[in-house]
Image (cartoon, rainbow, N blue to C red; front, side):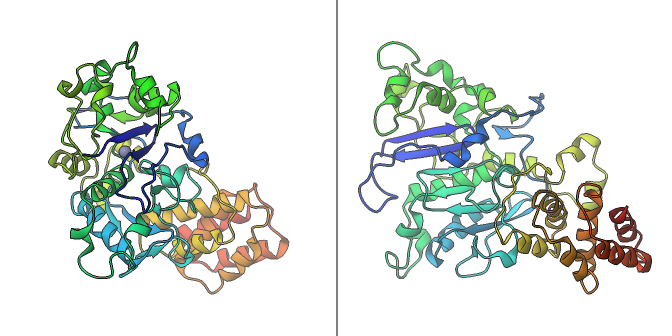
Length: 420
Ligand SMILES: [Zn+2]
């Protein structure tokens, strides 16, 4: 069995290998935190930990809403890796009311193509290591056009050159498939199970003296600092304060096989486990319980506490200045998915208020001939931006005319607010 060095860096995990299955050459992946993700470790105002009866360890504030369909795209994908991801990560589909949409066959969604709007899970292959952000962090805390997950080199390993024919899923390395299952577990909001406080793995680790964990991970290939070790193996409340905990599941796909050397009792430690390759029954149960199947009518009837978990993107989400942002927002305004349209209205508001070059007049001109969804989206964003952005005289007149003619009360009210 390979020696796996695993690290939970707050919201992000990295794995490195002293052997080589996933990588072309027999190279060792060094641990390294992507610079653009460092800010995710700053602690924000999570509401803390409430008593609960859930199993395992999962984010609370950063989970998706029930009934979401999460679009998955790839940067630099190919039909072979697309098939592998679709099949393996697709094992999470059907487990709960949240599912992944891997896009059209054979190649899936390309993250660089803006026609399909924004993608909730964005798989890259070119950064170091294997990691994924947690749940909605991919939208609320990351630039929407950068990877939210990284599977280093998988697009080179699982390519038509390497696997010209046959069933790629049965041919793929078992551990690589486990990584895919694990990273998509993070995308659904699962945390690392070995950091579940109920397991008390911290009590099992050698923190001081001869052979301590700091020395172990300071060496190659990890080269971790002391604070990285604490972050990776220490107390979850220090890194993910919105965690939700319950009975631990050592069989979880989120539980890693840590090296025996770091445990006081070596292989006898209860936290020393063999590699888990598959999604466990408890993994499925926790996902099913946090994403129950509920109708839209039931959503409307949820308690205030439950409702508070179902919320649009924050206006303070990461804003990208990329040129195709506007194109993607407009595509999402027309989506058949209620949640996507709702979030597109927030994105448009954010865009109008953040980008001094946002061309409001052309957006409004287009309203004369556009769909109801487009008109509502633009009107809501303008209403929310009233007093915060400048409208020229012609644009104001156009909006006022549209408001006068409009019969739909919601749209009319927003158009009226927009010109106030
Ligand atoms: Zn992980």
